[in-house]
Length: 346
Length: 163
Image (cartoon, rainbow over all chains, first blue to last red):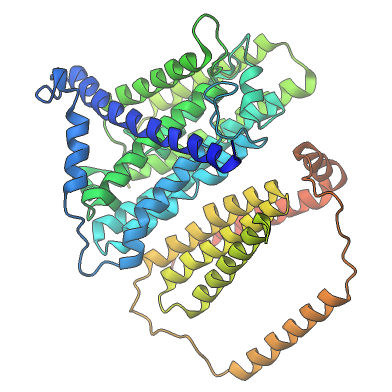
């Protein structure tokens, strides 16, 4: 088989898998959030509303693709793709199992960090190109938030890279055969998940797209297929973050009994359910609380995490001491957040 | 033409087109976006040269940070409030300086004896790390100190009250 057929087949399979997953996730989120809030969620389309996402997707494809008269044509029309492509590129190096991966890069973790940052450009293009004040406000909020939370996110991953002495995701997973990194670095896992919620624009950090403040933020003027692509990339990003967390913190496919890829998917979907649970439960933060939280709590804790892992690597401490210190720090962090939740309104 | 050559010319074209877009566009935000295209294409050229780490750093720093900051600032300034300046009276001086620079670049390009790698191979990531943090640790630390000073300067400027 020539290489280009091979790579096209792999990328195509991944794209189809992601679209189907997103359709399933949209349905799952609506049902799950509905149950949490004592509603039924979609019921009418198919058994238990199973076909609801499909119907919505068809509706989106058939809707008119509107563009405001004053919009910047170029930026407005390109933006959805500039958001989607970097997020999809993450999946090039996400291994579902040892063999099931498009291309296992030696610097996979660094590649993911570098590429994922590019999608902010698309959101900024959408916000600026729409010529709408809410879109612009949303885009500015989004850029500020994503830049701020990228730091703790990357530093949490750095802790993993230090411990594994590798950036290759397959190597990192294989080192967790006996002990997933979650038990080594509970603090790192906590930091990663919190920062990831902010990167995903998920509740309680959904300030850039807050309906009651900026009525949908950067995506306000979009309709039809372009809006659909934004929606798709939001969920694909959710899968990407959960997949990354399950690889570097939960040990990916390295558990017995079930086939490897199945374990990977079980862990990924468990994390996605947790993120949905958070969304259905917590109210939204204010923008100043958001920034304070990133710079005054998450970032120092991320440095502490690096420091602990560094000590462990340098002095060859036994594993359980690191786990214990990291866990203690995570609890201290939770207590701090719990006791000083708001701060003064400025 | 081999595939690598084709990619090289395509990326070179994208780089140049992006660069032209930066200087010729009448809209500053479009300029910033064209700059992004140019920088990403340069990252592609690094990949062709087996410098994956450099390429990723290029994407991370220039694409993910610098262009975002540029856009962030440009979005907060309203286009149309200030007159569009694409030209100024120093045109002849600029022409002389840039021609001179081009001449120097071309001459040095042809005078240098380029070492051709026999078997192109990427540098192992760990070798790069070892070199950076063992052989070149002092320049590295100085660079981070410079950044720290710049950061502190920015904070001091931001804190200064108007009165």
